[in-house]
Length: 170
Image (cartoon, rainbow, N blue to C red):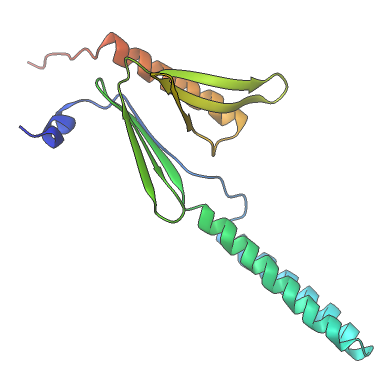
């Protein structure tokens, strides 16, 4: 039996995919760009009529820069983190917005979850610590979401440390 088949037989205790939050959906982006473009065009036309024709070009440049900034922001939104806990493995897979994949496979018996918390704002950072090395996880999440994630991941790690009990099916 290969390792791949062994992974399929092992139960998954916890599995999640963490993606960056985008507060403006694509339709909202289109509406914003149309409104901003129209306002810039009208303001530019006023300056063009008053004889300040170079200002018209700068209004167009503003629209182009806003469009570029949002496209860059949406491209960075393609990044994600995948976390999976089985009785013998804690797998963390980080995929950048450019598609670069980095994977870590840790033993859940040796891993602990550490938090950096601010008294007023809540959890700021989460780390997986194993053998003296730290791995930052869930950096896309806000403080409340990090607290929920930490609670679920801690429960999954504790279950992996206890060992998974399987019920016999008769």
